[in-house]
Image 1 (tube, rainbow, N blue to C red):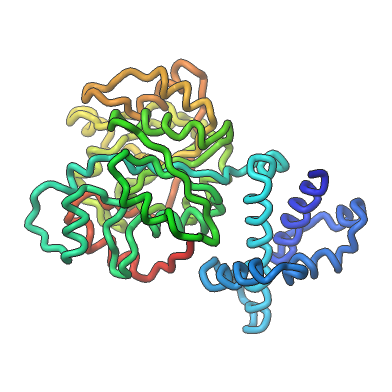
Image 2: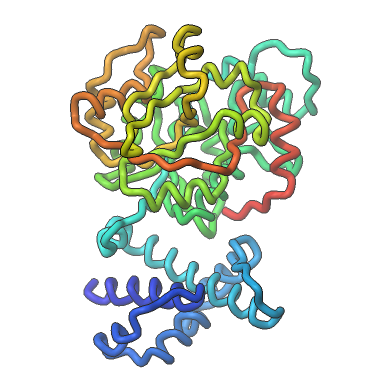
Length: 376
């Protein structure tokens, strides 16, 4: 295990070199590695077995390509090297788990929890919208995350692919005991970029209770948490991973209305935020009343996407039921701020989030996702 920090540092430095950033050249000498050999070995993926080579080739097709003003040969070389190193980093993450995160001064989470336990009441509601037969059949069940998009893939594939693009390795889907279709989707699949886990929330008691269902999966690490019926672009998730936990992205309502196509009246049902002068979260108002919504008409919006520390579990245990009788995650966050001294850092997200909560959303969301490549 003593070689692990060396490998992790080597991967980080080599990625920095490829991306044109500064690197600590003397570090290689300090650990007895010739810099040229180390970089060439890491970037070319030498000594990989055939399975690893195949995995790297898949990442080259599905992963992010490095941009910049380069000629064709340089761009292809940079793309190849970057994808190989990302593959190497994922191997370290998968092999070392939480030990990998502890090697870094500001460890990034490699786990994510997707809240997929909802009843889908709004999706099951009667609507004049005509859907394709396959979409209509799933919408009737309320299992929003399994609604097929234009590609035929279920919505959850896009959510999980964005997490993988952002550097997440382990994903836990919190489902109900009746959600066998979600389990069956991944039970027999061998994914190249993600490990899929499941946690069962026996009763739909609210999102705070859903988070508690994933406590064993988290194992004391920091983690991302997000809805299963929202598509969060990888750029937002990457930035969220970089933020010191606990943290959340905040969204401008005009961005959500104008670019994401979310109806203005629906925004009033989202959690509205009060941000302190130092940029930390001061107050979160879930399902604001009409009076509160009018008073906070310029307030930023939460889309229930979080970077949590394990302390959130204590807050979820202590939170009281809301007026709706549910154990709600925003209330647990407020409790953590007020009673546990939590300081949630925030950053303004500029990429639109897609919302798949109503039948009216399906066609527009499917069209927006049609150009997105999925690689799990």
